[in-house]
Image 1 (spheres, rainbow, N blue to C red):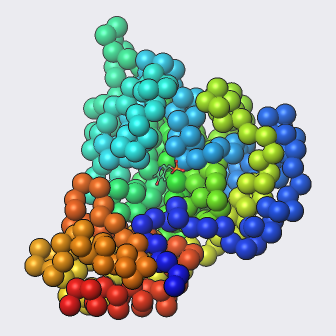
Image 2 (cartoon, rainbow, N blue to C red; image 1 turned 90 degrees about the horizontal axis):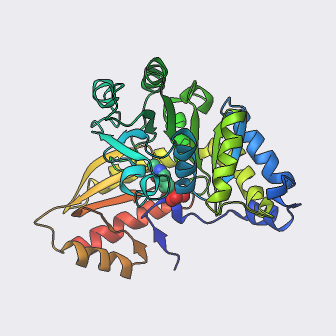
Length: 345
Ligand SMILES: *Cc1c(COP(=O)(O)O)cnc(C)c1O
């Protein structure tokens, strides 16, 4: 029986078209700039985002670290959300490896950073203070539930950054989900931003890899930082072959995941003992009610017995996150619903 893994869209496996493209990939040494598919992937991504250049990196974490390190020198400050991925889930890498101070401001319930809060966080010229260099925003906002941030806000925060002589980085791990939600091209979502990182390896199904896009000068500097972090890869065209299909094909089908997330939320709202807390883009948050028949760990174990993997969200044992993706089809959602009804009734 096939496993239904709802924990994340990072669990997606490459499609058969990807495996075939990988097997047949022409390759070269990318540190010498000679891997044809890596070069193509970087340029195609840049074109799609309306930027000059792109850089293939091993992960979203590496993409954010390289980007922040490229914008900020040691001892300088980056303004980021207090529940952003960069702050919560990257081991403090910008501080540990980049010597960069995170200055957090609260992420609002709609996933944005209030411009007023950012304004208060920007340092004035004073011998005691570090220099503020960067604002980083996340789209979609992950921890709060895959919340898509509107193009209007994105343009507003970008202009705000530039008016204050700061750079704007977008942690766009799932920016294509946001673009799909608003029905606008990614180039429009991030217009004017100084850098964007996005993941090929989540809902886009590639096995490995993220991309940074920005100006040619920024990407040249980022390429040096990727190298010092051990991210110079050789025949990476094997991965870029899958990445090209992720970029060109898989970005076009994300509405299906959003529709399925909506369908899952509707289906599960009928299950006794479960309430649906939120649904946005491809994320659904569930709450296992206090009077449910099973405890949270018993519930997860009972679902596992049905070959369904669902795990409590860090920080709250009754809160469960379901993430929809290419491999979770409608019939599997029906299976999940029946299994939950069976274990909870
Ligand atoms: C997944 C994710 C990352 C990091 O990507 P990895 O490839 O897992 O390192 C960064 N930011 C956000 C918002 C993410 O969801």
